[in-house]
Every structure is written in structure tokens, then in C-alpha cells.
Image (cartoon, rainbow over all chains, first blue to last red; front, side, top):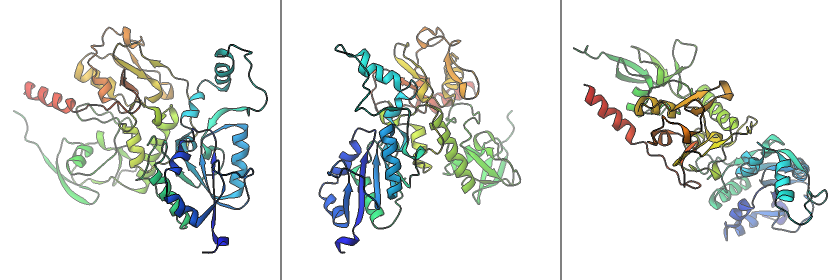
Length: 180
Length: 240
């Protein structure tokens, strides 16, 4: 296979703990097989600053929590053929959604006012504004493949990526579950 | 003298099966290794047909019927698996996930939960409905146990085991629809509920992490249910 025919894959990290990316890295030497078939064109693991055009597969870790997440995921959706919700935060909003019952304001107050002794203030710059409610990815943009798990095992992620690279939509129902 | 048991012949998924006339479709299916998903049903407790997961198709009846609360009849033709039933069952499970805050990854019964198990078994990998994210309390006033309303699916197994087996009837339901809540002793904190014997049966029959033992962390709480059919059987022996 020539370089030009390589698939273009990306990974993105929204509101999550990076555990899904750690699990992806746990593919260890099998990552070399993935990279033989595909170029990693955007990821927290590489240094590209802007999400590129014409991406074949994007693995999304994390829920949509902030205005930045929201803008990112819309751009990513527009530039990706197959969007994969990777892990429980992307699939069901998981732990980040635990603020939803009491709201974003309470979280900011606890973090920046109640527990701070020196100049307590809620930041107005640098930190992206939080959305009123944390959402799973599919409630914001269309998602093509769902891979629950917290995190999905390396074996599950490897299976999903290899199936997608082979042009098939993976069936993960016997491989992982919510909270796995 | 007891009347002799009548034998009935019916078809389940095309299989000819004989059964006692007083059995439910669910009982007969289980005896014949035909799996029907259930949540509110638990062997040893009365059946109430509340969760609707065990709905089956019966030829000649337009409406779906709950297998746990429908008795077999001669010549009945039952279908337990179909695209229509799968769709209903998946929707029920998804609605349960959407109605409260089920965060499996940090739940005390992660890996031992009936709701989580059924989601996987029914091929659910995401919830189509928007989540409600209700603001719900945790009652940790009892010395040994706690109630997390975030995880309750209102199956009423706790209500039934407490009333029917323990004989205390500490548990009940208040409100209606999605405002329904399990309560102890006229909505008093569990720790102040005088009728509670602290036997722990409710905790063990609870299908999710709604009722759990204090001191258990994520995924540490496995429910022990073996006592229930045994207790029921022994009591039936005694009353014979």
C-alpha cells in the first residue's frame, strides 16, 4: 500500500480523564500495525494544532462540557467520515455529567471560591465557559460508532480500529459495556 | 383434598411444551431454558408485571402481554423474541438509564448490576433518549445500609421482599410516574424507620446500586440472592 492510500485517523480529548487515550496507548506494539495502515493526523499524542480536513476515522474521548468542546466537536464532525464515541464519557457523559443535577455555577463556586483562600474569583479568561449541561457526544452531533467502557480495553479499541480500517462497522456488544 | 394439576400444552417460539395450568408463561419458559428478560421479577417474590421487559407476543391477542403475569392456556402460541419485542425491551432499558443518574463506572454494583447486564445482553451501546439528570438524594441515615435514589428503577423488589418475606413492610412507594420514590416508614429517614429490622433483604434483592451496604466501594457490592427461593420453599413446606 502506498503512502497516499493510507487512512487518516484522529483522536480527540474532550471532557474526560484521558483514560481512553491511555487504553489506546496500551495497544503497545500493535500500535505499529495501526500506524502501518493509517496516519495519525490529529491527536493529543501528536503535535498538529488544527483539526485537518478529510479525516476517515476520529475517536472521541470525553463528553461535551464547555463551549470549546462544542465548537471543536462540530468542526470535527464536519471534517470526519466516521465519528466514534470512545468510552463512557463520550457515550453517556459519565462522571462529567454528575454536575448536571446541580449545575455549572455550583461547580465553579466550589472550585474557585469556596476552596480558595487567596483572591478567590471565577476566571473570565483562558478557561472556556462551561455549558449549562454536560452532554454525550451523540446529543450534539451525529455519531456513527459507539464504544462504551470506562475505559474500553485496549483489545476492544484495537478491534474497533482494525475493523474500521478494514472498511467494516464493528459490532462491540459482546466486547464491552457501560462501566467496563 | 387438592384438585389434580391440569396439564396444558402450548407452543413457545414454535416448540411444543407441556405445563401445569397454573403456571405463568415466564415460569414455563425458564423451566425450558427459554430466556426472557426480566427486572421486577425475582423468584420467591410475587409478580407484578411492572417493568414490562418480559412482554411477549401471543397469537390472537393484539396487545403484548407480560410473561410473568400471564398464565398459560391450552393451545397458546407464544413468541418471546422478535424485532418488535427487541425494540420495546431496548427502549425500556434506555428509558430507565435516561430517567435517573446511572453512572456505571463509579457505581457500587458496577459489574454486578441487573440493569447494566440487560443493557449489554440486549445490545444497547448508547441511549437514544435525552437524559433527565434529576437532582436526587442519598439516604445514608441507616447504620449499615444506604439508599441512592439516583440508581433506583422502581422495580419494587425491596417493597415486596420487606412485606412478603420479612413481614415488616418498611418500604413503600410515594408519588406517581417519574416522581415516584421508594420510601421507608411514611417517608422518614431510613435510620429512623422503626419498622425496619435491618435484615438486609431489600439490599440483596435490589437489582441496581440503589440499595447497598455501607463501606462498599466501586464495583465491590455483589448481591446475595440465594436465600430467597430457599426461604420461600421452606415456608411452603411448613404450611403444607
